[in-house]
Amino acid sequence: MDRNKGGSEKRMFSILIADDHKHLVESLATTTPWEQYEVTRIYKAYSGTDALKLIEQHDIDILLTDIRMPGMSGLDLIEQAKARHADIECILITGYAEFEYAKRAIELQAVDYLMKPVRDEALAVSLDRIVQRRRAQLAKKRELEQADAELRTMLEQMQADLLVEKALAESSMREERSRIAADIHDLVGHTLTTTLVQIEAAKRLLVHNEQEGLKRLAFSQELVRKSLDDIREAVWKIKSADTGTETDLKHALLHLIRATEKAADVSIASRIEALPPTDPPRSKAICHALQEGLTNGIRHGGAARFEFELYPDAGGGLHFMLWNDGAPYSADRPGFGMKAMEERVRKLGGTLQIASTDTPPGTRLMLWLPPGQRKEAVRT
Image (cartoon, rainbow, N blue to C red; front, side, top):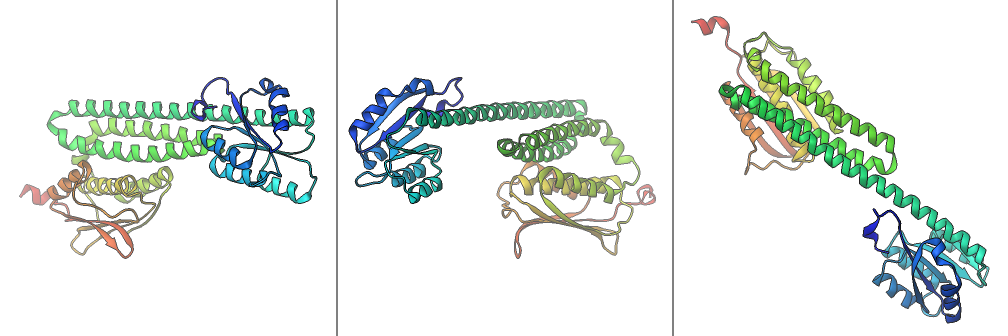
């Protein structure tokens, strides 16, 4: 049976009968009602060596083998067969009721240990047990394949929705297109990164724990819905944010850190000192720098641990440092998000540096922003 056709409605099985007594092999092959057990292909071998060659050449689902055979014993045959195909089902037959044989059969995870002459009823019980287990495995495999297809479709739809929202946002405020695109890039990039982490976790969990996997999938949907709301809000609030009042920067940063830890299964140690009043443009630049740094560390660096610091200097400027344990940063091809971050910092008169670190190994992002202008200074 072709293992690549697991999604078909009915699975046909194959069996290999191995025994150095040819008459026993022929008897089992011709007198057993294999069709009752959905076995459509029967292979025969008269030694362990010949049986192993057939296993290497064909997809064998069930191996029925004698223990004592010249050259290679049935126990050795099962061990080597499972090394090649871990899912092969094995039944041992023997004329010797020895404890060591039975013990070794259990260690090799043989389905059954049958005594010669093999009774039809005993063989029927073993074969029925195998078929029922295989049916359950195939049903589970089909469920997982269907879940995987649904996850892919959902992700594609999520991506399409986000791109539509991005296009609408860009067309609604043409004069501020670059700035809106940068904001939306951060939102979309951060959300897609954390969503992909959750979906991959859901796919793995569905194999062993369906309920937990479904919870992860529901959380992914919630992440995308929240991102869509944030994008819509960014479109109509972007101007008011630049002219509004001072924002609670520390609260916004801690909220982002907690949300990222939960969504992406990463650890973020933070130290945020008492901050001076910070105007909206600088608060926004700090928030976007943290969001972009976390997103890049997770997506491109595979980081699992971050350290974040933000503190003021004596002159009222802000020092920002974000380190992660991911792959070292490469400055060859800075992405759109990094370019947008550099542009924000430059317009505010600040500086930005990003480089790989040796002790401890990872990547460090640092930036400095000068204090904001007072309104009185602007009027003069």
